[in-house]
Picture 1 (tube, one colour):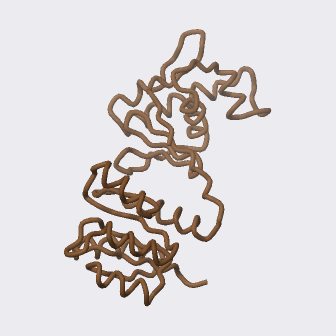
Picture 2 (cartoon, rainbow, N blue to C red):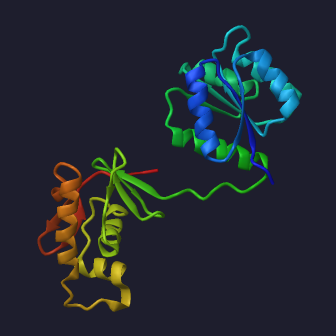
Picture 3 (spheres, rainbow, N blue to C red):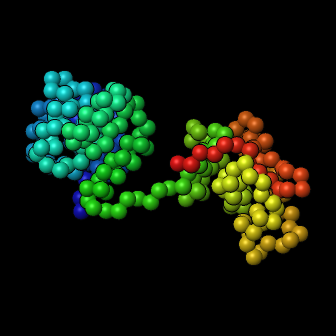
Length: 236
């Protein structure tokens, strides 16, 4: 099967080039149009797998184009616009757009929505939701086993350090005993007199402190209790 083709309808040449290059790097075949007339002609000729449609276009606007494309067939339409008015979003969805993205957008979000629409159109099951957590200026991807700052700088953790932090992040602001942490991170290998958890916590604190201001205070010691993650955690 060849690469999926995407019709990109955007009048701003710089934005069109940036988005087109992003999609091409991901392996898609991109067909570009600057206005409604080109979009209609190319949609008929190329039969794209998906249309990325700007709302604000010279001449005929994106809502009108969306309505006509939807009347012509079931091609997925992702409407992209600088207008954040909820009314525009509702109207776009009601006349046939499958999804809606407001500029400026994160390239990763655009790609995720494109993939989801293509998978849905092909009748494929949705991609499993990745387990990600954000806390105190850090982002943790459980599936990729990756911890990074908000600006994308990776925090190098050993396997033991990552496993320990994962236990704390999944149970924020809750005291976890050393025995619990040993059991969850080492299982049957754990020794009741093992001080590995204390050593790992110490190393983890140093790395967190280097990554974000006040990082060492994120993992608190609770006397006669164990440890807890003091930060608020957001999943997703």
